[in-house]
Image (cartoon, rainbow, N blue to C red; front, side, top):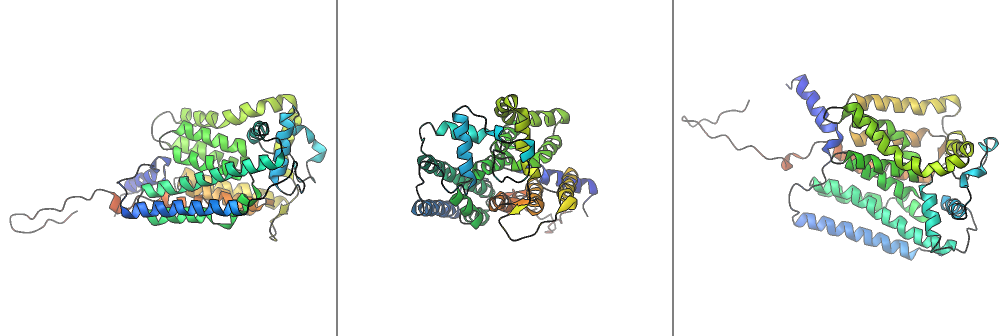
Amino acid sequence: MDHPSNVDSELHRLQSPSDVSLHPARRPGLAGFLVIALAVAAICLSALQQIRHATHAGDRPTLWANDIDYIWLAGYRVRHGDNPYGVIHSSEMVGRDKRADHLPLFYFVGAATQVPFPRFGDWLLFWRVICFTFHVGIAALMFWPLYARRQLAAALFAVLFWTFGRWTLNVLASANIDFPAIFFLVLSMLLLRSRPKAGALCFGTSLAVKQIGVFLAPLYLLWAWQSPGPRRAKRAVAAAVCTAIIPAILSLPFFIADPISFVHSLAFPAFRAPASHFDAPALGGLGGRVMMPFLMVLIFIAAARRRLGMFTSALLTLATFVDFNQVLWKQYMCWLVPLVPLLILDRPAADHDAPRPAAPLPDAHGMVPQSA
């Protein structure tokens, strides 16, 4: 029977962010090359599918049916020197559905890319190419860590699960900005092992695009605190600073220009009227608003006690947001998809990847000694 101290040590080893390795244990064999070829073929098939269904919009949005239409408008305002957050006031906190309620990174990107592509149709076509590029990047981030562990079937599953799933196809069709945010979120979790500051910067970049990942911020601080080595508080503070620096720098001009409207805009998702793309009722009233943070606190407690791995705790936190938030859009489901195959990384590496001990030699009487 394992000693309790050994069990705790093993739990710490398995559940620390430092366990994610991006370096293959051995050179790929024929099976490895076959899996890579199938993954590349899946991406090419996805690209052909997007080209086949591509449409060209006009000079300006006409239907105003997708978030990308309003994001283009926010970028248009930034490009012409207007404050996109200035259109909201406290009396408008409930009732309106569309406004500039994201941090401003993509508004700046939208304004910059509207210089070479001033027409909405051209700009949207260019953005679809960028969106698909991040789509491929997420597939690669899901594939490579599993491939590095020699989990070939799981690596191929991850690519197919992401590339052809309905939630992924929905975001590709609507051209929403979730993919860049998801890409930097997954990248940040994979970088926490070797480059914790770079991982925190990537997490901050994800928030600056779309701040759904903000619910994971306590986990990032907790992972920094739990990392091996001295000066835990210093590491946690460094993680917080690296996470906040990009959103803070980008938000500063708009906050200085109109702090009330800026705060109201970012707070709008917490106060908007319940809405959903699905015919599924949500727990309403005070109970609905209390249940989600309460469940997340339970997840954080379990993670603090090292009873949940990194990807498990992140998946449970985002699943709690999707299941209990008063607003549920289709694109929210996409945030869960990459974390499902990556749950494998919370488990120890396969036994065949570890060096095998040499077989014991028989003694003078021809008996093989038994291991303890």
